[in-house]
Length: 310
Image (cartoon, rainbow, N blue to C red; front, side, top):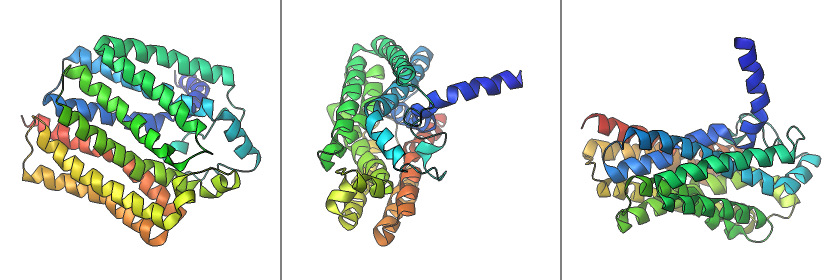
């Protein structure tokens, strides 16, 4: 049984790499976290199961859309030696851009994205038709984000919005009429985390290749020093919004949990961003990106611990 399993994984590997599945699985922590904080307790098991499948399908499809839209650019970068495989980038754990490498055809990638998109549509509609609108908006905005690569560095705002949509959909999946203030804080929290902890550091790691191709990203447009300041500012805002979010949840958090929350923010976000601001090195940007990727998962673990005590 072991050999067929390995063979199956090898066949699926380019597809999983297309959707950056290791990162996508970690990203699923954000909608789970938003739903638990909004509801204050575990939702019904059917909602949990359908929600997890829908979240996986949604992230799998949207991440694939990124490579489908960017295929021409990725191929040009590949021909000029871009996208080094240094093994330190969470997005490249399996393989970066399998279609551009010729490992996966465009048709196969498109079929993969559409199939998982159909699963996400069905699941989102079952949970709450409003969730379907969030998914469609995510796909369209992700495609728009990719097309603005050479036009404006402020496309990062679109990326920040996209990363909030899964969590917002999860809120409406468990609470049809959530508090507007709660929704706004979740949006702001994940928006600033994404820009400061994911988007800018990720663009920073590709700054050499992006300059060669005339890309307009925050590190290239503002310069590394100002990009580092913006990163630190965004993650500082994320810290305060994180604490405010715990205060808005019906699940009560005492002082020890708030202190642990601050510690998580310091270790995964603020200290790595301070290192980046001091040294301006590519490896520091990559370290921030990787650590920040685990941030929602770390807060989710804290919330689950609190739930077990209720």
